[in-house]
Image (cartoon, rainbow, N blue to C red; front, side, top):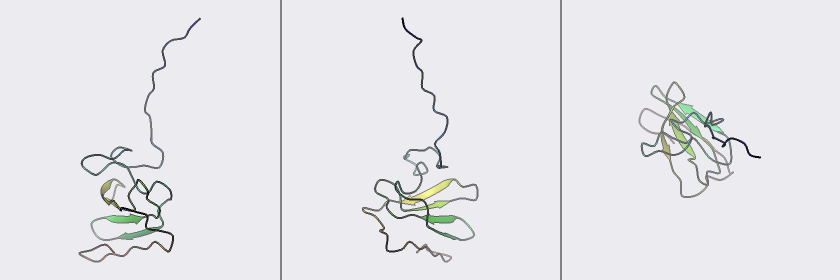
Length: 95
């Protein structure tokens, strides 16, 4: 007795509005940190910036557009840590 072959179907990646849920060469895939949710936000006239500590394989800081799509990210060589996560922005920089 046997059954038909199983065919996996990708349907959704929960909590990840990146252009794809995995990292892409264009840098618009994946999302934030892989251990914690966003804990800081700042915005300017162009984008919204999110930060999250404990980004072991993810990005601790990303920029998204007005539709929630990731525009760029910062890859850190280590965690931001739990001492506090904060963001600020002016017309030229994100801090």
